[in-house]
Image: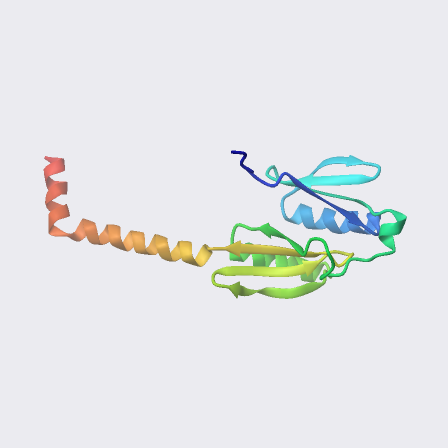
Length: 163
């Protein structure tokens, strides 16, 4: 059976190539991406795991601005390392005057995100899922390990092992 192992790249068309190139250049620099390739009519950035490309829309495409709710993609989410990174992204977005659709918050159980738009109104997201649950699981594992080490049975096993 064929298996997808990741998302290699996404390509979007933009109404104002220079404006979008500047926007995504700042955003991707902040997010740790580098330019992977650049051509007269396209530029792509990568973080070593995925690539994101932009290119200019044609004349007909520029006559139909993006509207969330139309056929097409709804939003693109960048998975970040931590909630702290989501907060740092929101600060960066505010400092650069980027339109924030929904501020950093917990939108679902342990799903922390900030939503924003690019110059054409395409919705983007920086998110972290599962951080709180993982922290709770680690704390339970540490407590369980400490309890086992304190049990009389474990202490005698440790003494036998040292002997």
